[in-house]
Image (cartoon, rainbow, N blue to C red; front, side):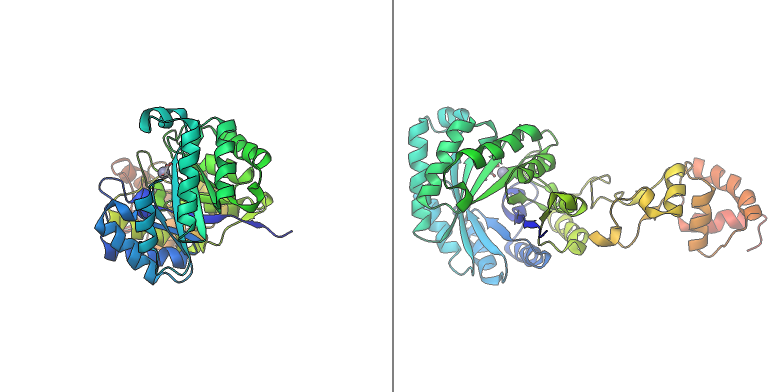
Length: 386
Ligand code: KIV
Ligand code: ZN
């Protein structure tokens, strides 16, 4: 059975770049955009053109450069924003305007001092106006995560009628539980007239550490686009991490969902974003963290040396990491020491290993990690003749 495609909408250069300390210049954005295109993302959200002349220029230059992906610019439900975005996108082969407005009661009352009816009018007007410039118009219902489903369905139906091609259902505050977010998508699928003509999109924030889980719940319940960033960078606790959702779908083929991502470029792309933005990922970050394929406990190392699949669900090569690492610490056993010693040129017999191991443990108790140089030293300090 052929798999359904999930579109990957990358917003590293918009939702990711707006984070303090992540600011990029146009040249850096072009390098990253070109890499995202090579990686196989379907949509690159290049920026928020009305926000500054620099952002306008970046969106314009990215539009000229990108050959495959759709290039998207963000706007509010404001005419001027839409005009400026259309202008910045005019060179794009496949332009998309991403316009929208807050739909939760909290946004309607406190941000807009408005009513539900008036918000629908503004939403419809902005989609129609964007549609007068480009064919592909995505609508976002900001804070959809906390918007009552019945009203959200009315908003969705109205913007579909106005010509929206994609409906973005953002969990802007990262509040939803996966069951809730999945149920929201299901509700929209079942209750919005015309929903089958458009793509439903997940846009999840990570305030409770659930952005990835929520995005997966979204696609399991009918969404076919995930909005995400490299390394999960983004507002506050960040956005859904691209590398995580892509590998989850790859690792669970029974979901019958697939992406166009060339996963072998994931690690390198993560490093490129770290280098340019200067924002590091924690060592235990899934897929791209320094320890994602490193094994340090004796029990795990023994299992890994016997068969990698014992403790690894992903072949590191699949995401562009050369090899798994067996880290030598005072928790390592004989098997790990023999394995690493062999890698640096010592094929120890059982008797030799028995002699070297206590020396190794003594050494390891004083250091965080035993590196190759230490192995040479340990063997020199033993009576083993290699
Ligand atoms: O989190 C959010 O709601 C957004 C929208 C502007 C799409 O980033
Ligand atoms: Zn967002």
